[in-house]
Length: 408
Image 1 (cartoon, one colour):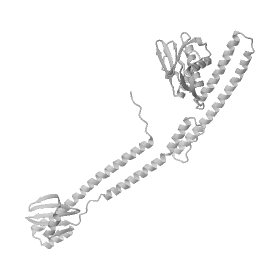
Image 2 (spheres, one colour; image 1 turned 135 degrees about the vertical axis):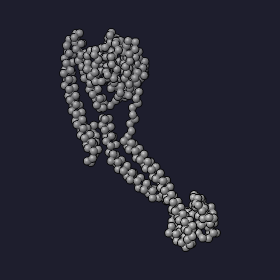
Image 3 (tube, helix red, strand yellow; image 1 turned 60 degrees about the vertical axis):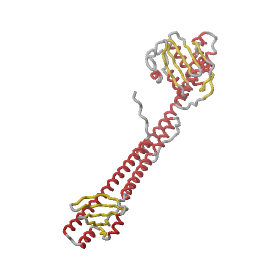
Image 4 (cartoon, helix red, strand yellow; image 1 turned 180 degrees about the vertical axis):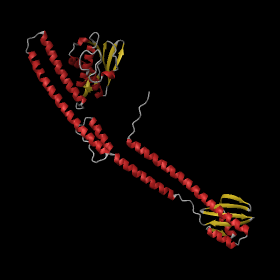
């Protein structure tokens, strides 16, 4: 199965890009420095060999010492005439290289920061010191690297500063998603981020207005529905006792309970219903759910352990009521079986396996092809209440029974 890609913050991504670029620039400058040192040394070697060959040529031609000294001065070379001085200078010197010649050899030696050229012309040794030689100094290369690094850091800071409002925008959108409707996300400026923030702020304003209008509309509807329901219930209670009176009372009470339930679910879905978490005795929860479902207790069989859970009693009783309703409506024998302990609540009924997965049925207004009644909100409400508590809602089919489970 293909694994999802891990999300990487754009700020981390940009920092990683600049870190790689900085490392690449440092590596490039290092190798340039190495190459530049080699080129410097090669130039020194070539210049000294050319000088030594020129001196050998003059010796072969029999030029005077003054002419040889003049050539040395042109090449900025010092002729060491004192043999003892020459021995002292060469004591401990490092041989850099030797080039054979028809009349002897040419040695290049280094001692400290000084370069010496020793010429063997038919057994006669002639020593020169290279006055022009300067040890290789990588300072210029690393100054350029420092300037490059500073410019890269400046560009990184500029990009970071420019994108920093995105963090504010992200926090703003997250707070809005958590239900903080009075938040404002507008950022001053004229760049693209500011324009996006202004558009989001305008959208939040419109959504805030729509939510306010919806809440007002729902409250008005509930008020308008509850008023005639209350009047109808009072009127029914004034009728003489009979079977029809009991039936009408149950209908009016069920309608009143359903309207109150829809109001609670609407508040929960809009993030405006604070959970009242408290210890709940499992038996009390089951009894309340059966009362809300307005079904005879004999319709079900029960395995209830004396357990307690933490949750919102009102919401969990609504969720369990919906599971009991569904179990009775879609059962072959119109009964249900309920199992409850400290780990889960299971409501099961006999019947055919659902043709779709649970994810299909927990969408609002979804019904199976064999739906009997309702708007398809039952399982959606159960799933929403379970998620609000951090519980899971599951479905399984075993031994000819549909099992709906709220797992704590």
